Length: 93
Image (cartoon, rainbow, N blue to C red):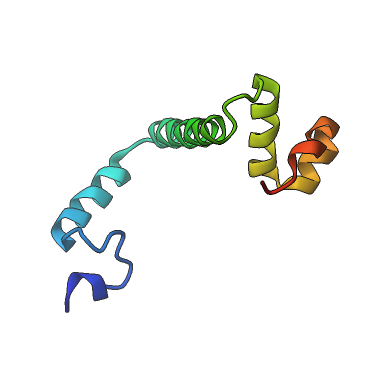
């Protein structure tokens, strides 16, 4: 069976042997190590989102960038409930 047809394949461009090694390494990590990795990945995603906001809205103040990030993360309705000053930025432009 081709690798892309294997059930539970994590990445279609990775061999089954390599995937087994990767999963084995993940299993050896402590809970704290896994949490560190997830926190770092979460931070990286947030930084990329902020970079995208800065690229689309180069004149935005730090507060506007924060509010636009809140809209991305929470959705417009909840972001405006939490941060009423986010309302002007909910336009999809």
